[in-house]
Image (cartoon, rainbow, N blue to C red; front, side, top):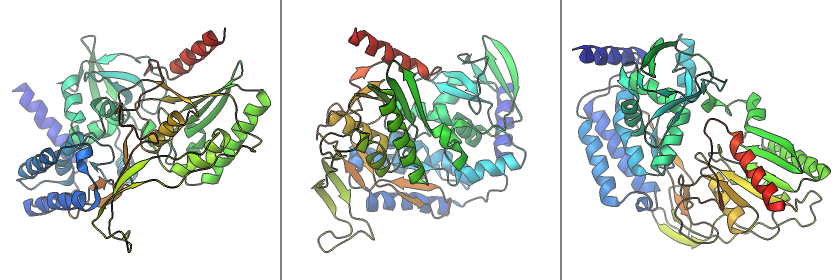
Length: 447
């Protein structure tokens, strides 16, 4: 009885958080599933790269059957987003639209969010990492056993079903950074959260702090997204947390200054950190990083498969064609660049390295421009891309579908996942630990 009352209260909170949403009819929901089928068929060159065709059809059928009663958009999303983990590709996903606007409206209405940045372990456990927004917490590392009366492992497993990503480990990393958002969309946004740790309840108020996940969406965030630091002993750390910035010239000026400072300081070991880099535009690393590192011609892929979509047809490629080809364009090195870095380069990769950041990592590894360092087991080295975002006609949820798949420059398809040359553990509570471990390793090899 107590459990039934708790669930009823949670349902009321979730409903209150989204009371303004219109209720969609079964016919409208079914239309959206059919639209998803059509979008995948029209755009994706080969869904079998990540999900077998029979499994894809069965998953869509199951989702369609579950949309058998009228419901609001967020309720429909909780059904349809369960396809994300089955798609097993972060570029093939059903996502909430207008994330920033939704968050802003919720906060403006006096709402708050789960008050901690967390770590979700691959085993489904939930740990506090920091205060929401990234400030240090005295509870960092503490395991949450229950959350508002529900076992934390059950909450995590429920939310993981909704998360997009290539692998279970990748999806755990995504949920770690977006837990507050998924919790809000699934359980609602209460004013107070009751956590149980070490068998004792702790009551914590909701937070209105800006979550770390949203850093990078405003111009003032530049110095948090891109950082450069001289580490002493002729080493330097260049942190690039995304290859997406509206004013690219600002980024190019930043990297030019970093390489100039390295030249002046006599740096011999450069660490490029893309552990939090979920991708963006390839030209940002082709123009902003590789001109200072590349010593021979390179390309970001070898062979590809693509779907010719409306607006991209030609005399030789008809809309609907699936085209297999070889990437013919090569980027040229700049041997006369006065800031050409001639030392050792290490690329730090991790759980959020994705999309263009994977292409960058593949290029650095395959052409011998640098060694990859960090943990393994997250994203595919063979990347889909060219994503198209199609709002579903009724729920207006965003259907994301890639139009091509790229083989890495070497053409190798094994190992399947991004695999560091130097495997080192990455402490989720101390981002500097991997840097320090690599510097110790470099010192030991030079003795």
